[in-house]
Image (cartoon, rainbow, N blue to C red; front, side):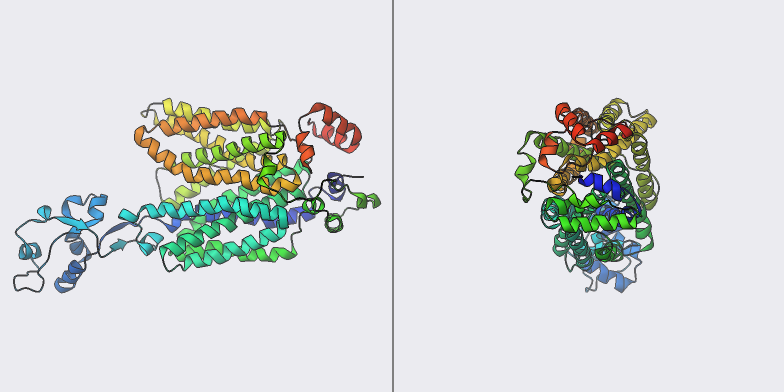
Length: 559
């Protein structure tokens, strides 16, 4: 009986049908990128801010002061260097505005014999005055001074949502289906995003941003799995990379959105409302036929395969209805399935470390280096464009030399670049920047490859759950990265680069232990995963399956 991959080849591995579904689902990469990086624009630092003093405000109205004069009598004069102490404190003085001694020309002398420089100060009690051209969550919820850490909490909340969403919705996609999980997640992102935009207080904002992260991760991981399960082995590497290029496209687009919309609420609505359009996909994207087969729903899977063949202008032979259905009993995925057997356990440990390392190095290098000049919007756009060469290099190499070697070299190359950059003196700045750019390029390639390599190493019944759980380590790395960077930099500014370098080198060594998957069909069962990379078993499989043998020879690949 033909295997699923044989039937897929006959129906068309990447025909008109798959291209349509692929293009539709790629839009998810753009909206997910919006949620991932939006905090940069939602929490832009105000141009200036200082303590609000109700007494000084009354003085200003009485004496008809300008805003600059009002500020002179609010911000301690010896702290006009914009330090936190100056911006977060005000003069501790009673102004005697209602006494006959008060004078607008000399308000300080009317209240005390001390000069402004000698006046005591106190923390802000009446809030802050903001000078800004755009509203942000900082001015909305007063996230300055002692509450400045709450800005970090807003990003930590969505990363925590990504982490939990990877587990919960990854399980749901394997248990209840890819399509229904994708549609529910899209609706959840849109609904929670609207509530975030109109949150009455900071804690409601954080909670629903956390929920937005849960559903956002569901849309991203599920769309990725649907795409890779609908195409043939030769096309998986292309779709896996291009869908991530749409993520980069989203990072390139959001500065334009933020530039055109002057309010944070408007930006938030602009980036989440498109998720409701994805509900229309109910009529345009199918359930994964691979998942249907593993759930013993053979008839529905065959109907979808028939639709694929029809739209691709292909004809399925009469024996396609005898497609092989896995003999394993239908079971719901669990965490134990990822560590129960030796091969799957090894893959899980290595892939979790690879996800974690990619997030730590990528986000660490972005925060440490970034773009040092120009406007926020231009800087952000340029930093996204830098990632594009990585995808091009992958496309040029991954079908010629395989997955494993580029994956290992990109991690190790990023690590070596970080270590050398740490050793270069600061007076050779151009060389440090060049090496950091090489490190950024290497880890970008690793980040993009880990997605589809992870997909290719798990069986259908565990694929969505396994990819989601492993990628959750990426979210854990995203939470840790800022603390790792800034705390270690206080000890020695180059210490984070050394840590990044060691992490990258270790990861480069570990991924060499993974099997090569170039040209191989996606594994359907745990047994197939356990036999990956075992010559005797593969030889037997090739003799039993002439199609697979000729397929591998035509690709120039090997198991």
